[in-house]
Length: 68
Image 1 (cartoon, rainbow, N blue to C red):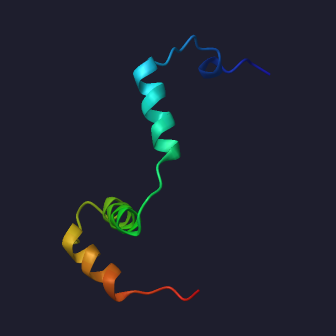
Image 2 (image 1 turned 180 degrees about the vertical axis):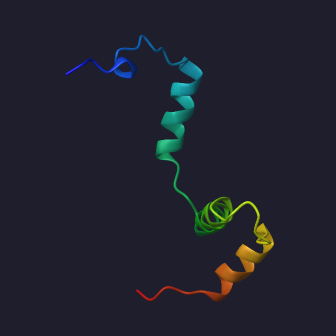
Image 3 (image 1 turned 45 degrees about the vertical axis):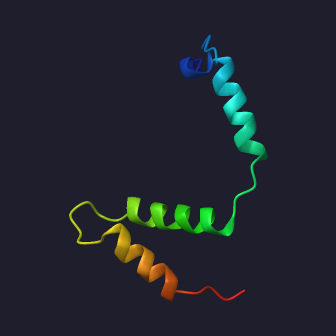
């Protein structure tokens, strides 16, 4: 089997990026942050030629509730 070149990299990560990633791992997301991420995800996955707006996704997310 041929070696996978993307796994044979000498990639170095800048210390500042390492620090920011470590901070992000420790941060607790609020319910508002999670809602904003859900809206952003849904909007980003909408077809480009659709008439869906970020506001329409946000309004729809307020009406739709999941049962637990």
